[in-house]
Image (cartoon, rainbow, N blue to C red; front, side):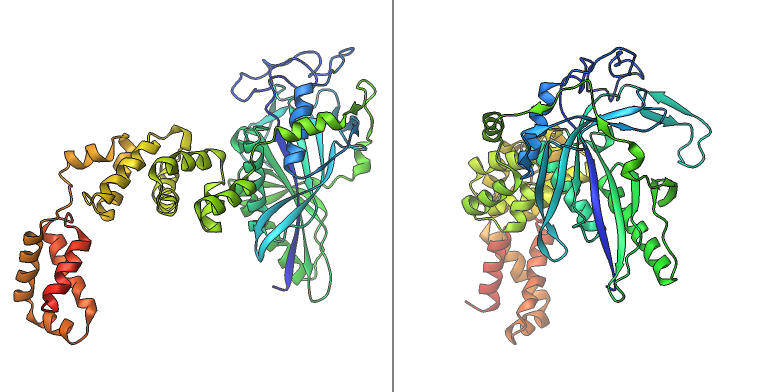
Length: 482
C-alpha cells in the first residue's frame, strides 16, 4: 500500500420541486420531448428576470440539515461565467461567495471501520442544458444536438473534503448520500435520469517519498458502479505514471463506457477562469432561526437513526440493520412484516437473502414486487406448524415472488405438505440400515457424520417432503439402538 488515493467528490442533486429554480417551467423534464419545457427566463432571453423558488430553498435547507451541515442564515447567488453550447445565458446562477450551508459530514463504513466524510459546502445552483452527441464516444462525435429542457432545473451541489481513500469508499459514500436524500424526499436520487451526478477529483500520494500527483477530475459517471470503476482506472493510471517518474497532467477526464477507460477532455479550469461575481437580479437569501428550526423538526428518522433503533428494538446485528435501512422502502417493508411475523432475526435473514436476491435478479424495485407482508406471515406459519421444511420454503420462494400466490396455496397445489408420518420415516431408515450395514457399523464406531447418509435416503424416498428434524431424531434412535 505504498500509493494512497486522495479523493474528493462534487455531487449534484436535483431537487424534487414542481417548477424550476427561477421560473415557472416544469422541473421534471426527463421524459419530455426536447426543448418543450422552456421559457424566456430559463433560456436567458434579454429582459427576463429570475425569481427564486421558495420550495427549492426549503428542500436545500432540509438536505443540509440531514447532512449535519451548519446553515448560513445569509447566503447569496452569483454568476459563474463560461461558454458552452448548452448554457444559453453564458453564465450559470450558483452560490460561490456565500453558500447556503457548510461543515457537514456523512458517516460511512470505510476500509478500516466507521469513518466520517466531511462536507465542505452545500450550495444551490441551476442546471445547464444537455448536449446529445452523435456518437457514443466522447472523442469521436461529429456533431451534437442541444436540449434546453434542463436549463434552470434546481440543484444542490455537495462538495466533500478529500477524505475518501479508495474507489470503494467513494461508491459507499454515494450510496449513503442517495439514501439520505431519498429518506428526506429531497430528491429521487435516480442516477439514470440525471437526478444524482458525480464528478470526482483524485490524486495519489507516494507514502514512501511524500510526493503527490496532480489532481485529476473525472466526469460522466452515471452509476455507482461507474464511479468506482472510473476511479479504479484513474488510480492505476496515475500510479503507473508515478512509478515511471512521470508527471500527471492536471486535467478533466471523462469516463468512456464503451472502452471502460478515462479519456482526456480538457485542461482543468481554475476558479478564476469562471470570473464569479454577484448575481445583480436576485436579492440575498436571508433565513430566520425559526425557519430553519421548523424544517429541522420536519426531518424524518434518517438511515443511521433507524439502524440504531432496529438494533435496539429488534435485537438485530449491525450488519443486518445497515442493510435493512439502506432504503426507506426496504426499512418500511421490514417493519410491516415484523409486526405480524414477530421473528425479527429470522425475518431479516429471509429478506436479506431470498428477497433481495430475487429483486436483484429481476432488476426490480421493492415498490413493484407482488410479495406483501402477508406472504411472509403465511410462509412462517407453514414452517412453524411443521407443514413445510425451510428447504421447501426456499424452493418455492422464487415462485411466490414471481406469481404473488400465497405460500399455503402453492404448497397445496404442488402437494408439498411436510411428511410427519413416524412409521413411514422409520421404515425407510430401517431399510437403509439393512442395505448398508457398513454405514451402521461406522456410526457405532463414532463416525456420527454417517447419519447424513440415512437422512438423505429419507429425503430421496419422500422427494424432500419428510420433516428433517423428525427424521434426525428417528435415525439417531435407531442407530443407537434406543
